[in-house]
Amino acid sequence: MQQAAVTERRNNIAPIPFEADAPFLKIVGELPRELNGVLYRNGPNPQFDSPGAHWFVGDGMLHAFHLENGRASYRNRWVRTPKWLAEHDAGRALFGGFGRKLPDAPATITDGGVANTNIIFHAGKLLALEEAHLPTEIEPGTLATRGYHNYQGRVAGSFTAHPKIDPITGELVFFGYNAAGPLTSALSYGSIDASGKATRFERFEAPYASMVHDFIVTENHVLFPILPITGSMERAMNGRPPYAWEPDKGAYVGVMKRNGTAKDIAWFRGEASYVFHIMNAWEDGNRIISDVMQFEEAPLFPHPDGRPTDPEKSRARHCRWTFDLSGNTDRFQQTYLDDLTGEFPRIDDRRAGLKSHHGWYACANPKLPMFGALSGIVHVDGSGKRLGHYLLPAGDTISEPVFVERSKDALEGDGWLLAVVWRARENRSDLAVFNATDIEAGPVALVQLGHRVPDGFHGNWVGAQ
Image (cartoon, rainbow, N blue to C red; front, side, top):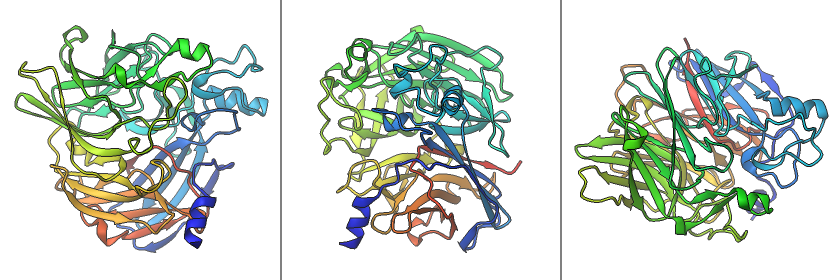
């Protein structure tokens, strides 16, 4: 009963109101000596309360765990976007949800970007990402904000928080939704080569305006999921939800060859569902296979009239999508591989877009709401079969697990999983390090912080250069 009370009294969503440096962190167990680099994490951490603002839209805060020769240090910093700077100077919130200015905000303040969703390293640049704005460049050591990065003016508008890096060519492939302005049906698509040069940027129309959080890239194809969290300017102008769950719109996935053009996209249809995150995808003869975390009904967003979606259906499960490219059907198959609630899937990124044999995701307690209840890790093989399952003590929660290979030439899956754990009883966080192929044994090391890292979104490991 006492533990249940702890869970009810606290969660780990609220922001922390400070920036900090912790040069020497206590370690329980032993950090693997091969782990030399930085785990960067990003998530919403609003500088000021804003009435009615969605959890998704808080200012980005970066958390960096630096591991070197068995030692660990930590630093956190807000991403100093134009919005953050304007609100810092004003001493109050100027924006509500999804870039909406508050009525009393100065007319000169227009940029509501928060850079709060992901952080990646590509072509020598560390980039904080969210899906409504260009990448924000970050200085790796200090976490200082350098400003928007537009690839020498070759890229404009929205830029996904989930670009994909081709492990063979080093190319970064990206897209953006709302590409013709807020709540529009246009998508952009582009690529950045391994040297950081933009090599492609174009726009096309999707079947309807949708929140497109992630997309699918294989060796030779790109797939764009248009799923029914719909955007509507008319709703937004009338004080109703700008984004809402409209299952009658159906599910579409556009399949395009990476060396093709948007006019050649083939649109496949499927059962209404929602997917925030892709685990991986690959080609199998005339088929494309993609493993995703699929919701029957979208969480966090209501029906157009404001009614909530069904919490029983608003939980994600590991699901396989199959596309037949031989022209026999325009329907894609959706097959659940497990009944366990989970989110934030990851793989060994050296197999991105290729057939993979290992995957991991954070799993949830099915008795609690989908978010804020991620309380363990699942390890699966290439068919979705569970290879391992680790659960935290009751009340504790866990972040997305990030895989780090033991060495560049290590076998797929040979390495560690890094995940940030919130300890509910102590109201602080640990960085947990697991042997990636033996998660059931529990962490081999815990890096202990004196404060908590709020539940965030995504992170990545950047090895020592």
